[in-house]
Image 1 (cartoon, rainbow, N blue to C red):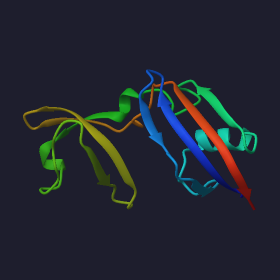
Image 2: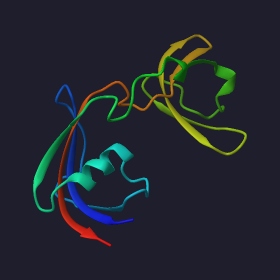
Image 3: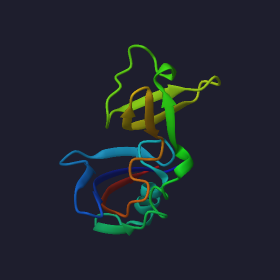
Length: 136
């Protein structure tokens, strides 16, 4: 898989900045997990040395919101030392060792609503990228 050196900026459709490299250069290989696959695809399409903007619908970017990924959990399902507060990301391990990260949306007594969708699910985004170099 090729490697890329890029400068980038990811914006929510409302114009708010989600992430950027700033003056730094991100070096990654396709598939190494540093960028989501939808953003890697934009980098692969980009022209070396040109600043380009890709407008991605929610379906092209991080997907739609899946209602089944929003779970109401009992407080007893959380580790005792875990911070339980609205808008806090929490990580859970499955019996097979997989990890799932969710965001606490609501606390109602012992009922805690956790959203396991990607934080940008359901959102259109703008991805500005400049490919500085391509490394094999």
